[in-house]
Image (cartoon, rainbow, N blue to C red; front, side):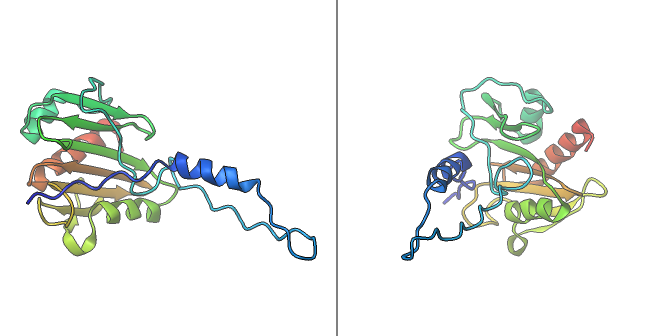
Length: 193
């Protein structure tokens, strides 16, 4: 049985809208005075998305990833690219490359977080320590990697590394983490991270 790539949580905008709708509701105490307002939770760090955020793209999209060539991805990941989706909620945009399977063949997310510990939290989510091996390429980057079937609930392999406040995560539907590593190294080089 194949496992699936982590699913994208409900958009933060849904929760934000619900929170804003409730923010105007005050609470009165029995003596007629207003109850103290509870502090508003801090917005998610970095680009405003949760550390678990994944891109949401259409498998039939024909976008252009600004830092990866579709033909290079096809050669590196070993599958024909039938669609490319770009999610501009991320900065730089997250890219998903599709082929014939129902899941993306490749998902690439670059996260610019407010501090190194937040970047490492992204890495730890993408490549949980208890299921992964250390990753340290390119030089100065650190994180984790896993092959297909090693992390419960996920299809394929992953390579996720951080340097300073930046994290780069690559999920592939292939079983070899070296493919995800090659993509991560290319992204880091192309973006000059």
